[in-house]
Image (cartoon, one colour):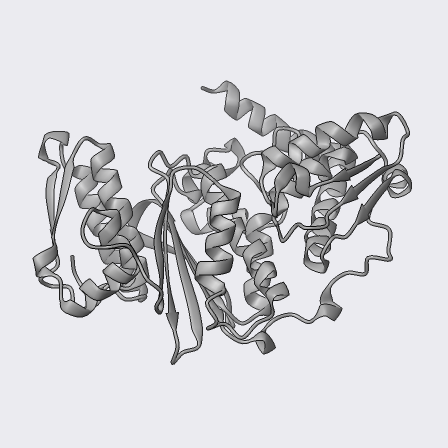
Length: 290
Length: 115
């Protein structure tokens, strides 16, 4: 395991490792994870590493961690966020700037909603009202719903977060190891010729969805995009070989060289109420709804 | 008829399955011309999937005028209302535009049949 911060180039390292492991035959999946070259392991690296370990195990392999190779600061962080405990080493997590590592095989609204409200947002480091915390949870749950509804990830969904006090930012990464958004979008006959970035762009259009079945759907990503843009946060999505970044400069779609079989979403929010939308932006309840 | 959504979903009204449960409760009553009130008190968090199934799909066979007359939404938070409003706009477009709906559903059926 190398140093992993929140730079896109560091994410590429993770996707490369995942790709290399996916190429290994099933009888070569006795893997030891060593941290000698890892000087920093950000929350994205933590969530990804957890997912990777589950992926190897799901293929019949065995994963062991060389915990002795961990630097003390990383070891402390992994203990605090519960990663060590999850993999059978050390005691359970405790409160700090790390938001707990989390693994969900199925969608559980209460468990995920509580995680977002009390473990991610509600620890006193975000200067926002409880009403706004609920609004943020509404939007971030859309990420989880997308992962569970569309990814077909057989090993579930992995998350981890981090509070960066100096930057006054709060991050959360959600990763699935499913088919990926471009694969899903391009499976529709009218989209087969899309590149990955075109497929991601299609997925962000309101009303576009790969699941319809007579029900109008396809708002989740669009709502999320509007939320991020209004509130000056940022969002990165890596899915197959597509990449989209949303920040104050707008939306940028790219085709990447590295293919990740799954979807990684990192959302970063500002920790101050002044960046969020005003009550006056909410539609009037007096108008007819339909 | 008054339905307390909290009794179906708990604090989090987010997923399609619980939305479908609400739809199954209210759709026959609305079709029969009865008034329905959905009380959202106690709900903290919403997601579009819930509203797509609970309310958006009512527009399949009930007109906006009928729904404005028969369906009353109470105690919904401003953000919940904001999401619901978007869901309704999306559903109105989907269900009113037959050509659009057929185009979307046809490609999905072709896709399903290709397995």
